[in-house]
Length: 250
Image 1: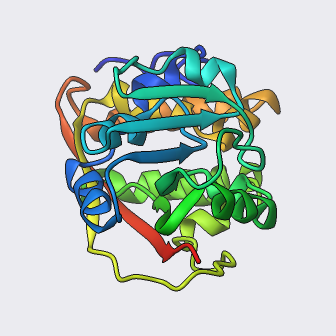
Image 2: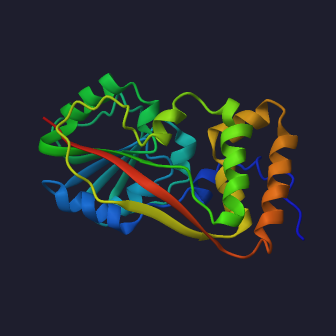
């Protein structure tokens, strides 16, 4: 049996771009269909562009904004995407230009009152704001119990308090906009063991545990996971439920 790569939790700056899952085409299609215009979308906290790229297939122009220049350096260029380094609370650009503003797996880090003020400033009348998150990944029964113990018990002390907002699907976030109904969506991937461990390396809790000297804990989990996985090159199904707060910007 192949052993766990000793430094799987020491991935470089491109790990987020390599291992974070892209969003399904159905999500971008839904957002484009309900937006008042396809002229411009702004994706805030875009990271390396997982959702930004999908929106670019549906909107004439997409502005991807993130405070991290390193994240944007690993974003894939696209003719209809403009990437910009800026915080969520200072989006810049002209007033009243966007028909859709999105924040995917990022809103729990924002100063929400200031962000919402910026959303109102950049939005056209009737524009939509979508706060999107995906929950804890679900694996098949042979892997899920060991993974959940790692997620909840072993990494638990290293998750920031904001993680609870993600786990709850953002239901506890203040959201001062009239809400729209959203469809049931999910992310589904077929990953081998190394891809799944690479994804876990992008978690803030994993990085915190590593910095706290818990490399042995992380390595032990990788060994256990591979023992449950079997052939590490065998693809296994990983599913994330998508949660969304969608509102009309007044």
